[in-house]
Length: 192
Image (cartoon, rainbow, N blue to C red; front, side, top):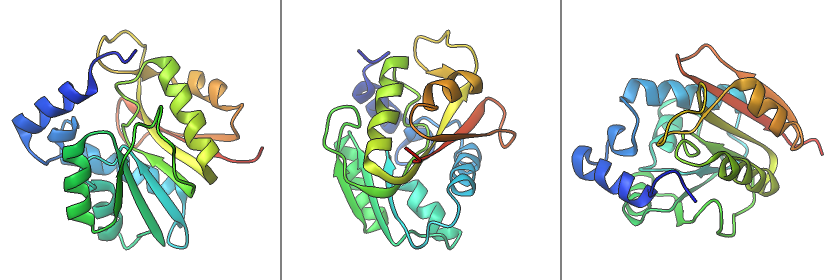
């Protein structure tokens, strides 16, 4: 069971902040873009690849990739909330599907990118989501996590060494830190 009801959580954030970075629970656009930059650095040149944005929110990652001239050959956004799916499709003009990353069938792609998508999950759900993304990705998966001891009733925190150990079963793991306090990025390359 999730830590909190994500539909209620995000619906309330959208009501309060609209279709903004705060509307998808980032503290501000600067921090959101720092995380996006870490995802793109870790995944490398994706311009000839297909990419699934798992938990795409309002499509802000696609807009960031466009701003950085780093659009993938094919983009698919996934989100569980109707309001986000609708807004992301409008903003990006790309394929955006309503999917629950833990239960729904996932499309195949070269890369799965997830920026903050696991921050409201339990630890079990986080590992399940990572495994499902790895199974659907041809090259690999890159995602951000909140860094710290897991003591929150709302947010999902991990220490880099913990998640590195868990993800070693899925492929070659690289941890990226230093771009933002309280955050780190994990890259898993499918080598198995």
